[in-house]
Image (cartoon, rainbow, N blue to C red; front, side, top):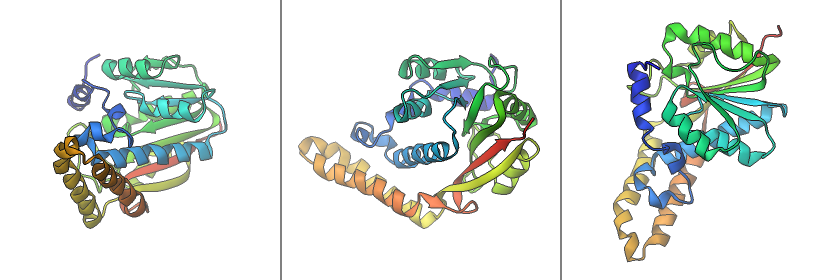
Length: 263
């Protein structure tokens, strides 16, 4: 598959399954990720919370599953849940299959024909995926989402907000208005949520906690594990209390829940 420059940038990050390197219990083994860990882990928690609220118990499809961390967490919620995934990245899918044995995960481009029949899924999830797709091709993706979903199926989309600086591997970020405008021709919008407050002051405090942790980390061998654990837990607790929830105009990410037009 020929990759665009943003896709190549993302592909190069999959030298390792980096989403699986972040966990609250093992964060001491990966200090450079301490700042992104609470943001990402609580993001997973929030997405799963939304999925469980709207999902009716049928099949789930993760469109742009990457290395499969969300699939992994969903199966932890319910080992009997029917879930499938897809990503264009061969590296990402190879990791996803290792961490999710028995789950159907395909390599394909969402802007092209995809290897799933129409009306296959009750819920489709697109987590931080649309920003990786050329804007002119997003209607093709929306059409594929419509086809895959059952008549009244649920689509859950998450994207970076325009409050977040544009990443080199992204084509665009979204406001609540531009995201809804993109989705409305294809889906009925049910709810939109903000995530990770964009407040510079609040994020600065989290970074200070991160820096403190990072520079004390080499002292772990001197018996400071308890202190480091306390600082790590402080970072998670601070994020949950002051940065976790926000309105749709104040965050760094957006979560939108839609329902397929009855066909």
